[in-house]
Length: 175
Image (cartoon, rainbow, N blue to C red):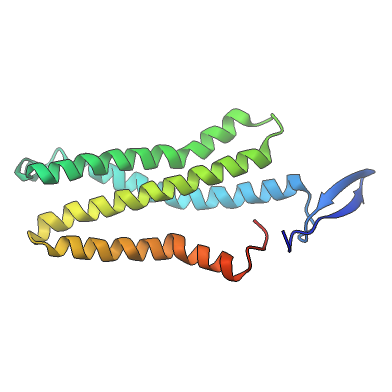
């Protein structure tokens, strides 16, 4: 990559590849892992709170009043929330099982992919939860329009803005 032109430097008698940040591959993997963990913590907290709320809904008196369509939306939402939770916790499990096997750069890549997948599942969970709540509250077709607009907003904030930022940067930069 353009900004990650690699330079060779001598450190402690060994040749190591350095990036423009002047970090070795191992240092870069450690930095990326730390950054990824911070990001995952935010997403994990959100999905765990949402899933806890969703799981408790089935035990409320009003749950019995839900129609078949709303119950289906509820089941799909709980399944998506569970999948998102598992996917966003997976990087921690992955790291724990491969620690000490000299796989940090690969672990960071795999964990990054899991995190992106978890964010997509979180998007779907939030969208379905909003749909269920707004259908119950509004009792009309406005719920679909509001949820559609919010879905597009989340996609723009979570995926399109970062894609645009990478594109305008020319695809270069430290990953």
